[in-house]
Length: 280
Image: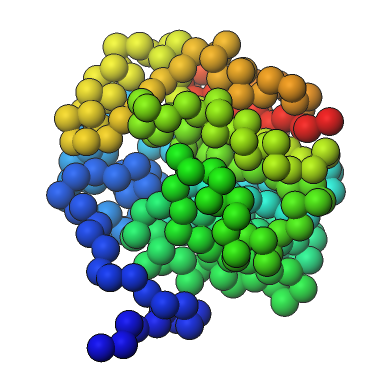
């Protein structure tokens, strides 16, 4: 029997197990953002997360807001026209390409994620401006070499020109046996000078007991969460030039004046560091 094709004409693999019986980071994130692409296990994990971290939904929204501000800066001010977003998650408009192609319609964006449910919704990630291009690849961040060698990536991005790598709230989900610094290093080494790294990373610097409770909740369901200190997160930017204001809590990275005035929580309520660095 012939193997069916997806909407882009690509050969589909055998049916993939979505593991809906256990929470997945992308789907829990979707719950916190008010989305509908999630399952009971994800909603239960979100409820437990909110019980331990009452500002969890705020954290999710601020994380998303940072991505918007960071890529807008990279596109409009730094002149970057190529983006590789790993750990894309379930599409939530406006997506990265929708932001950068407003001012630079020729921009090219490659999305990558290892969650089959993201693949199922990846059509929303291909609505590129006619002058630009987008692509989605099913890929695992623990194997950066496979991402870089992916045919769709190589057809979409020119690695001889600067690329912005965005790793938004994904590195702290890597399994314990994976060295996240080596992963980031291998990816950035493949990019031309003038490329950028933008990331967010969860920390236990402010609420260690709450973060421990959240981590144990996910660990019990088969997912790993590894919080890091500010110094440890800074290591991801070794050899890069940090863009002002450096590494800071996520909502303090170049906030819009209106957004800044609307903040009703303290920095310790949003235990997520954010930063952008340039490769010289």
